[in-house]
Length: 440
Ligand code: GLN
Image (cartoon, rainbow, N blue to C red; front, side):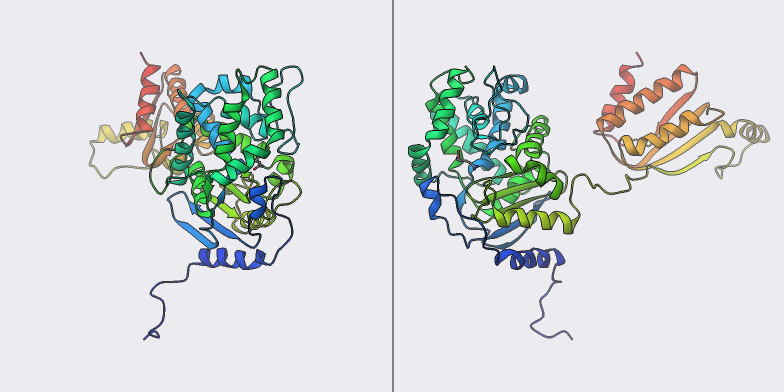
C-alpha cells in the first residue's frame, strides 16, 4: 500500500527540470531593468518566470509565469507576419531588408542610398513594417495587430496605456527614425501614424506563459496548439523564423546562434521567446537586461534548455530515419498460393527482375534518397518495381516531386514503377496529381 498522501501520478522529469532551472538562475541578479522608457523603470527585477509549450499545447511552467509585462520588440516578428499577409513578400522586401545589422536595436541602420532598413527586427525596420499593416483607419489597423498578437497567444491581449503614453512622449529617437524613413520615401506619409501603431504594439501586455504559446505557435506551423486557431499564413513562417534567427537578438545574434541555436526574439520589457520548429516554444520573463537589451536570466535559461534538452537546430537527430523496412525480389518471396507449373516456371525466370521495397515512416530527401539510389544503381535494373507505402506516414513536397520523376525515369526505360497500398488524402493525393500531370 502506498502512503495515503502519495501523489496520484508520477512526478514529471520535465516539470522537475523546469523547476530546477528556475531555482538555478533565480539567484542571478546581474543586469538592470530598462529605464529609457520611464514606465519600464518600474519593473520588479526579482520577477522571473519560465514556460515551455509543446506543439500540442502542453505548458510546463515555473515561477512568475503569470506576471504581466509589455511585449516590446517581441511584437516585431509577429507584426512582420501581418505585413507579409497584408502586402505580400515582394512589397515588404522592397521596404525592409533581411540582413543582420549587427547593431543595437535602436541603431539607425539604413541601406546606403535607398534608406531601406536592414531588417525588420531593429526599430527602423519595425516602424517601416508597422506602416505596411493595412486597414481603413488607425483603429482598424490597431485591431488587426492586436488581433494577430492575441491569436498567437491564444487569448485576447490588451495594451498597457501607461507604457504606451510613456513611450510615445519620450520616443524621440524612434520619431527621428520615422522622419528619416519618410525622407527616404520608405514611409509614404506622415510618420506619426506608423510610430503610434509601433508604440502601441510594443505596449501589448503578455506573460511568460503567453510567450511560450506564441513561440509554440511559430513552432507549430502558425497554428496556436491550444486553441487550434491559425495566427499567420503558413507560407510566411519561413520569412519570420529567418529574421528571428539572423537578427532576433540584435548585436548578440551570432553569439545566440552559437550558444542556443533557435530562432528567437527579445524585448526590453524583459521577455524572450525561442522557437524550435516542430518541437516546442520557450517563453522567459526576467526584466533585468544586459548591455544589449536582452534579459540576463532569459539568455541563461535558453542556453541551459538548449544544451540540456539537446535542442540546437543544427544538431538534429543524428539518424535521419530509415525509409526501407524490407527489400526483396520475386525470386525470394513466394505467396502461399498454389500455382501451375507454368506459372512457377515464369516466376523462376522473371522473379528476380521484380523488386519490392517496403517503405516506412516519413519520406523526405534524406530517407527517400537511398531508395532512389538502390533502384537506379541496381544492375540489372529492375523491369518492375513496387514501392509499398503501407507504413509510410508522410511524404513532404520534395519527396512527392522526386517520386513523380522516378516514375518517369522508369517509363523512359519501358520499365514499371508501382506504388502499392498508398493512403488516401494529403500528401499522397498530391503524389497522384504529380504523377498524372506528367502522364497525359
Ligand atoms: N519599444 C521599444 C523601443 O522602440 C522596443 C525596443 C526593444 O524591445 N528592444 O525602444
